Length: 90
Image (cartoon, rainbow, N blue to C red; front, top):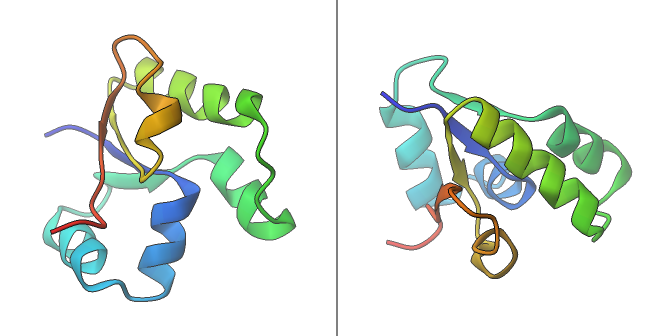
């Protein structure tokens, strides 16, 4: 089973009990859905739209051979080899 790494937008959706995101997260085994320290920092300090943060998240996902869960396909589609999904859509 792949490791699913939630980007900041999907952590926020989960916190607001978005039905589709909630369903995905709760259906997966404990430990298969995680987030990065970058997302934690963004949650604490507020979202800073700087490309290096997205690149750090992408690097963490690639290193862990995971799947990034994000609504930001525009930026992350530019990272070669990065697997990502958007759980906020049905």
